[in-house]
Amino acid sequence: MNTGATADTMNLTPQVDARESVKNWLAGQQEAMLALLEKLVNIDSFSRDEAGIGEVADTIALYLQDEGITAHIETVPGYGPVLRARVGQGQGAPVFLTGHMDTVFPKGTVAQRPFSTDGLRAYGPGVADMKSGLVLNVFVLIAMARYGAAFGPVELLMTCDEEIGSPATRETIMQTVKGARAVFNAEPARANGNVVTSRKGNFLVEFGVKGVAAHSGINFAKGASAIDALARKIIALHALTNDPVRGITSNVGVIAGGIVPNMVAPFATAGLDVRYGPSENTEQLRERIRSIIEETSTPGTQGYISDIRQTTPMRETPAFLLQLYQDCAQELGFSVEGEFTGGAADSGLTSLVGVPTLCATGPVGGGAHTEQEYCEIATIVPRTQAVALATLALLQPDTAASAA
Image (cartoon, rainbow, N blue to C red; front, side, top):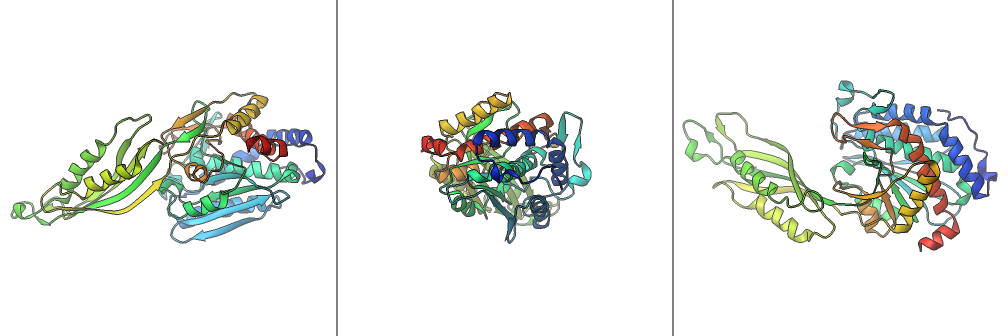
């Protein structure tokens, strides 16, 4: 990869020169950004696909290496790698660019529908959530290495398990970003162009039911159907939904069970996603979920929880950080508002440890987790410029002082 500029910017000390250089350099990078996006989208990287996520990490690391930036890859057994990189002088608090390399699409999806464009939108598995965000972060880091390194440290953190609730990396995320100036999390900007200033939290629950096998014709009464019990539990779990916009939503999205149609099912399993707002009593909600799953919904059966993971809600973005991003957007010719969303993300973890966090700073996209997922091509460069300019501003002493 050669993005067409030399690392001659350590001599650029006035911030105004750096800002103009960042804007101008990034303005010419759309072709390079789309080329990297195509490479990343055309790699299957389903959660827990260590090889696929590893290939994404290696591709990004090599890209950064061509720019003289060293990326460090740490293996998380059973999940995949975590990628880190750092540019900038000084030991001051860094600005973090965060994202995840895993997607919700199983291995083989790329073969069925690889990266494509229609001139306005890019398509493919994970193109918005969040491989375009990864590309954005990579180019922000490169821009800072070229034109902003003299102002302070900027760090890149890409993880491998966000789509399954970050069970292996949540502590790493929180410990790594603690004390940072700010975090820009490159989830896709909303379809209306907005960034995200607060999010729901969620529980991801894997559970099952043990039943009693029996011949469904000869010994039906001796059996206890795990599938029957599971169906009743699903109805009860879905009844937890009380407010799809700002309250609780409950969705059993995966089920399996039984052996053959003429056998009373001896087992059944399911995957549950429960979203909740910032004001929810999570202990009470957790207990209600446990109670529904473990209660005897069909005589002779037993429900159990095999795993439960929690993502905390994203706390409200501090006003100064949203305003800073909005000012940068205005400078670039677009307007943006902050909004609440029902989606959970690692921004909940970074805000939990007290770091000012702005989420959905990636390019505009929609249809996440579906075959219709897309990224608006025209937003890739300006959204990258906005994050880069906001990052540069955060590294200035006066901005840091006002934020404190």
